[in-house]
Length: 299
Image (cartoon, rainbow, N blue to C red; front, side):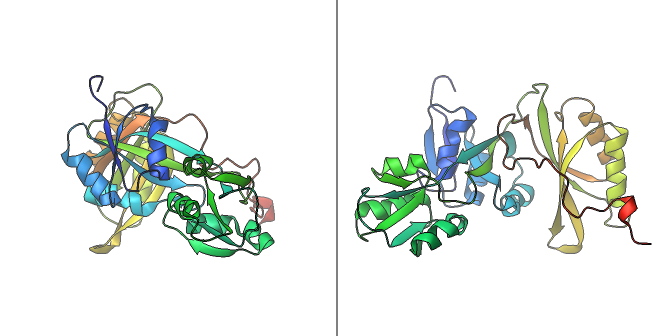
């Protein structure tokens, strides 16, 4: 890696948010390799030594991106999550110049939805683009006079556009958690996370309780769990579980052995350093409104 620039692939065009996420992983210099789908990224990483891939797995508007995670679960044997990072970007309104009336707005559909108040306030006609880069390219072409693009500052400036409004969304920025995938699990750092897929030996009452019990017995903290159905066996499910620790170290290594000995299927999705900077969603300072306590129960 020291002698040559690493190659990193992603399922978006050049200039997209997936492309902009690559430097967040510490790649100051790299050769970008845009691909047509997440499946293509996973396949390329699985079959190409030294290749890395970047894929989104969670964002602040949709939560966990189960379709992307499913690709790792069901379609990959040799690609692992080796790092995680969160990309946070504000969205600004960009035009060809500061002067002139605006009548149209273009951006990705998700951004248009988050900017509904700005759009309504100015009475703008909306146009969808496949990416913010495509939106800025359309505005920069001058083909539609009075059109503005909603995009991150880095994208708007790269097309020579002028920011005319810096607060257009109901949230201050869009945050996306990205996974860096590769073929080799990194060494433990002492502050790691592990993603496991566990298929219970039988999808019956008590299966999940037994699995959770093994986590408790081995002293492993489970920080997330998502149930994923199995298409060929609709009554069966597997569970994507996030756990604290590195798979090569106790107590997590002992837990994995215990799960396998109990005849549960286990797949390692990745073991990687914990991301310690901004999170996708800021934690709430209060409990959910309407939460019941014993004193509130009827009867």
